[in-house]
Structure formats: structure tokens, C-alpha cells
Amino acid sequence: MTARIHPTAIVEAGVEIGPGTAVWDHVHLRGPSRIGRDCIIGEKTYVAYGVTIGDGVKINAQVYICTGITIEDRVMIAAGVVFTNDRYPRAFVPGRDGLAPSGVTEDTLEAVVRTGATIGARAVIGPGVEIGRYAMVGMGAVVVRDVPPHGLVVGNPARLRGWVCVCGRPLEDDGGRLRCGRCERRFTRELEPL
Image (cartoon, rainbow, N blue to C red; front, side, top):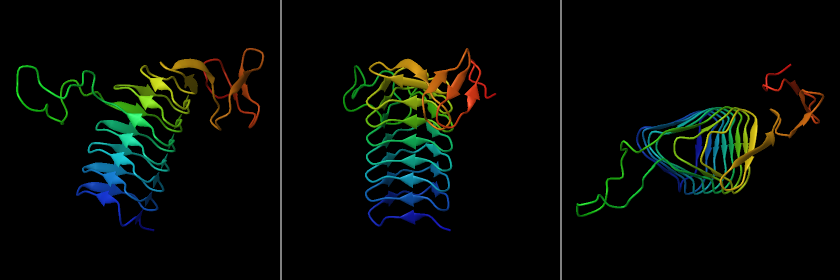
């Protein structure tokens, strides 16, 4: 099975796309970058060079993924999410004429979204942030700190509000342990499966 690439998509040299992946209209993929198998890259999404996307990742429309971002397997990124990577962005270099370079500098920070995490629509992910395994970022959240595994964060700035199961449902306190009311998975307080 090969990748399906819409005729309006721009796929630069050096982009690796796994089998079964669908790249929709007006997507721009810069090389070198890697996109795994069985992914969806939604319309009008931009993926910069130096990005790695795992297998089974679903990226909705109008997502901006800048240089230095790693997205592991089975991640969901909803519409309009923006990743950032520069701690001190300026359009100019003080004391010099012209624009600042657009490439990687000492102020460019890498970020990672771990396996199974979900990022809600219109969220903004700050530079250098790690979003833990099976975590969930609420829509419109502005994430400026790491999100722990299974953590549920919302708001601006995003704050920890609870814990979510592998299936995505909020975990409930069950006598000192955490339990999912949907799939019945149980976790210790350290979020280790029982």
C-alpha cells in the first residue's frame, strides 16, 4: 500500500512518507522530515523540516508543526494546533540590518508529544515542552510546561485538572486508586496499570 498524496500538496525532497498515509489538499511538507505509516495529514497543514511523526498519527486541518518537533505513535492533533520552538523570537538581529535568519539557533528548543496523547483544537504548544503518554490537552490551551503521562491540562496557561485513561475518558478515584468508568482499566496513583 502506498501513501495517498493530494495533487495540491507540496512535498519537498527529503520527505519520507510511510505506506497507508493520506496527505490532504494544500498540505506543505518540508524536507528532510519523516511521517510514519497509516497517518492522516489534514488539509492546509504545515510540517517543517526536522520533524518526525510516528505511525497511526491523526493530524487535522490547519496545524502548524515547526522544526524540532517529534510526534510519537497514535497521537491525535486537532484542527488549528500551533507548535512553537523559539524562546526569544525576533524578526531582526539587534544592531544589524535586515531580517533575522529563519533557521535553527541556540534559542530553538525541541519538543515531543508522546505515544497516545491528544491535543485539542486551537491549542498552542510552547517551545521545549514534553506532552506525556496518553495525556490530553484541552482545546484552546496554551501549554508552557511539560504535561505528565495521562495528565489532563486546560486553560491559559494550561494547568493540570485531572487524569485520563488510555481510552481518553477521565479517571475516577476508586478508594485510593484510579479507575476508568468506560473501559474499567485501573491504575495506581502513580498511573501504573494494575
